Picture 1 (cartoon, rainbow, N blue to C red):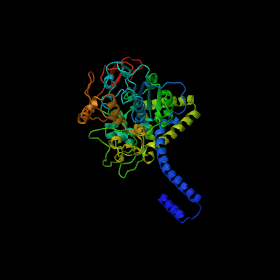
Picture 2: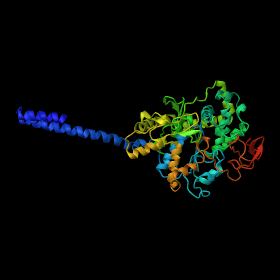
Picture 3: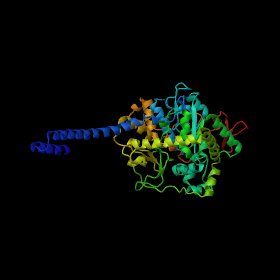
Picture 4: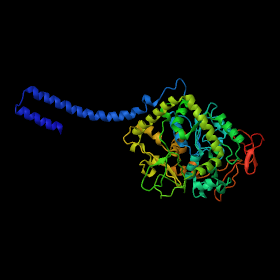
Length: 514
């Protein structure tokens, strides 16, 4: 329109012979330049947006502050504890391994035999002690060091993450309310905290979620009678194996320590909080949430993505006295949290508080930059049914609604893939990696694949794996098929276990795990 108007003016000037020739020639040149500038401006703006997106994952900022001459760790074992933001950590491991074509020690289903102690044969493709080089192990398991060492190389870096047991109990109660009998019987967490023994029966399946869950995940006896001697023994066992224990309450600082320990670039530990749980029942689409929830795929209990009827969330309110009672009830977890939280801050002292603040600031800035490029709606998590791409909707389970993210539209393929890796839910990402490592299995029709699903995340079962030789199914509620350890088995230090008053203890008298 601008060009046509200018042309009419030019014809009027020429035909009317108004002004000297140089004037209308100059005007013609001006119009040509203006038109070309408009055209080039549109192209330039579009290319700027695309090139900015393309370059953000390859910019110098992606590397972060120098790490010196160290070499990246590629043999990594992460003990994925429950309700500790461990799914966000696992996403980082998935991304790094995926981008560098590393081999994962993947489960046959979605967990490595949990809640039974880990057995090497739970790893898909395992052919004997170190017959195949596995680089990364990180799915849920109950830790069992001798069996892990059959799978992972000798130079493997072991790490895990812990959380304040009161906050962990709040999250566990909300998430496992319909799964753990001890929680199901209580009207609210406060009532449970007032008298846990009234509701807790160690023989019932899934009740391990209600008592010393961290201690249990580390492979120790969560039903043992607390003593300082036993707590210190467990702490020592953990310290001898795990080189770094992260603290979920200080997640950004944990990521900086992890980055330096693994010698990874900054982008490898930049994260979007995954498995955020909504604090209110779904009704009109609120997105408020924290990031301590966990997705589960469950037949009859959960659904994939879509709408469910709004339900009242469990009552999680606690008085100060009830919070203290929960610490006493989870005494082993509270001991571990205090011990390793102290160690964590000693590591930060050695790292340097000023340097830590600087690198945390860079981490947060980088996260904001990636969120602007990758995510819609300013990066806020949204309800699963509002996510247009069904392949990245988080699985839903029980009363807690798990939130997810939507990708920014119009991304080029390379950027879209990098962004997708950062928000892909745990279960779907495991399936992607499984398909990459075992393409022959995924040639099976989808209906048959769904029938072969074994155990889903979070302790809710689709189809149980058959018990292995030497493991007997006992206890549990009617129809629950609860399984417990049997006398004669060993703990992960190799000590034989004997039964004493319904609790498995070490056979040797010294340092007995009671």
